[in-house]
Image 1 (cartoon, one colour):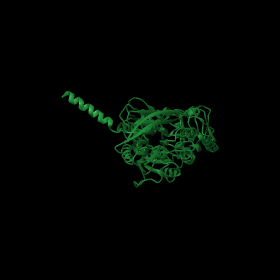
Image 2: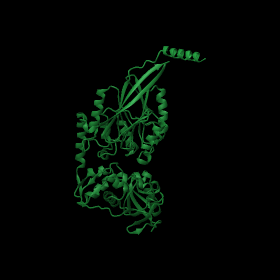
Image 3: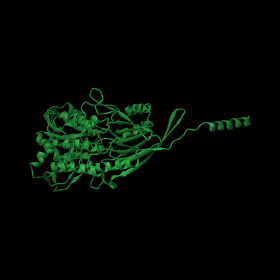
Image 4: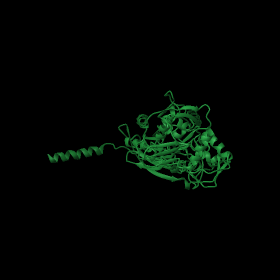
Length: 508
């Protein structure tokens, strides 16, 4: 019996060897190029980033390999210095010249509202992908598609795009509709496979927790992401992932070697990613794009390099300063807003400050500085609310304060004591206005930005406040602040213990 079994096994092996084996072709290399979160046209002080260098990388990679797909994973039209003047039109014009194969809107694409978003996307001469975005009636938005199929060297690459599903709270998309990214990716992958895609690539603008969810679910072969402003690549043997930091400092290249074979009429696809991190500090700018950027920078300087006032004290707008506590620069801007609006108090969010820099004493502040700090084009709203509502607003402001989120409150006219070790919703220990405790039954006027007034950053209570100045008659906050600063030769804002975050104590 043993000899018979052995004989049968040998015969089976011989039979298998006699079958025609699948003919594996030479691998085809497809290079995916990723950039994301580009707010600045030009390189930074270290010579890193900027669109002229990004354009040069894409051009060089296309010269090396005909099978290149270049994608931008979102955040372009805002916030940038010039977007405060032209609502991001310059960025779309420049991106039109770098040869993108796909662009996915980020949350900042909606900062100027749905009408501007539609206008900018209509100006794009590159494919805009967003499978989880629809108009207010649920219908597709013109100039935006869900996915596309690209054939390179005989390899069919399926691309699908997904915008930031949390844009409703992080930006100003109006009545545009967003659906969950994960659900959309699974549907898109199935559709692309049915369309014959050998390799499925999803380009997403999503926070890291969503990225990790997509990876765990194996939502695509390759996921190219933006939003988190970090540099990350990974491969778990099933799904490859990449994110490319911000401002074109790095371009992530994913060289995918794809081998396709056929047997019994079925295609078998094997692939493997090789990651290259391209530091643009070492890249010579594309001369044509550099000339276009220079022309925009000259136009910008003409508008913005006009002095407003001088600061006698140090101003710090770095993230840790404006999202972690009271800051002198936010006191300056909040005071200016309150004065311009004639309000009892003013409230702005720390995440609205985007300069991320230090202004030394003696610095001449310009229009450029104000727009650098407040690039979103927000309007100034005047609201009326009770003391009880205002306290609830502040509870919402401190709900996640220990995480250094953009919701951290910066105020004028208020003194607040809070304790972030207490449960969310019960963290405000005391509030006073001009030395007097907040009266729950008294009505107050509050100057703020339209983003917060619509419930942005979790400020839901503000949505129910009465609007004394709203959308139809609101002015741009930057213009109000610039006017206030230009009225005095020097300012000297300081941290004044308007916001005291400590341990529990009895309410006053």
